Image (tube, rainbow, N blue to C red; front, side, top):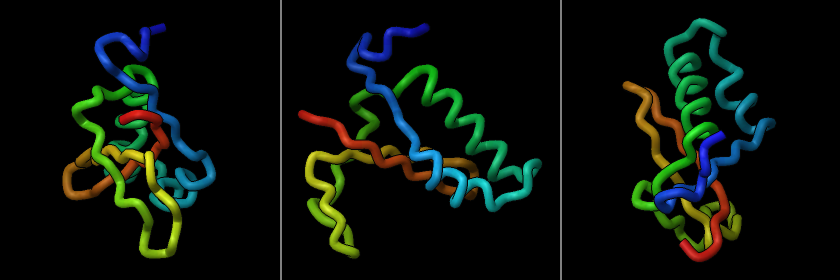
Length: 90
């Protein structure tokens, strides 16, 4: 197993219920789904470099508190995948 913290890399954690709701709606062989699943495998295996993390606004439009949260935008051809994971001190 890779050392996720090596070289200022951070683990990426997916919410399985949200993942299923967002990615599971695509057909199993859809390009968007296969690209998202491939990206998830890489992110879970390798983590992400601190430089790729973007600070979230303090609150979302629906009032969700996002202070101390970061997001990662991973382009999937024409589709977009946003991963939001709390991280302290980033």
